[in-house]
Length: 105
Image (cartoon, rainbow, N blue to C red; front, top):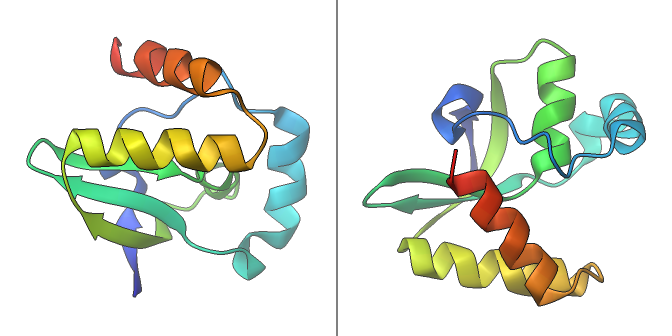
C-alpha cells in the first residue's frame, strides 16, 4: 500500500545517474506514475526505485511523494535495486557501482 513520505527523509537527491530530459518528461506525468519504492531498514529509509520521479517532484516544488514502503535490511534493498535495474537493461555491475557511489557520500 502506497503512502506519502517526506522526500528529505530519503537522503540527498541523486544526481550522478539522473537524466534531465527524463525528469522533465516525468514532471508532466508525475501524478499518473507508480509510487517510488522505499525500504524501511534499521538504518532508515532507502529509496531503491524512483530517483527520476523524486527529481521530478523536487522540480515541481513538492516535499513529499507517494511510496511503496517495504520493510527489510540494507541487503534486501540492494538486492531489489540490482534486480530492478536489470529489468530496465542496466548491467548488475553498473547498478552496484552507482549504488556504492551514492552511499559513499
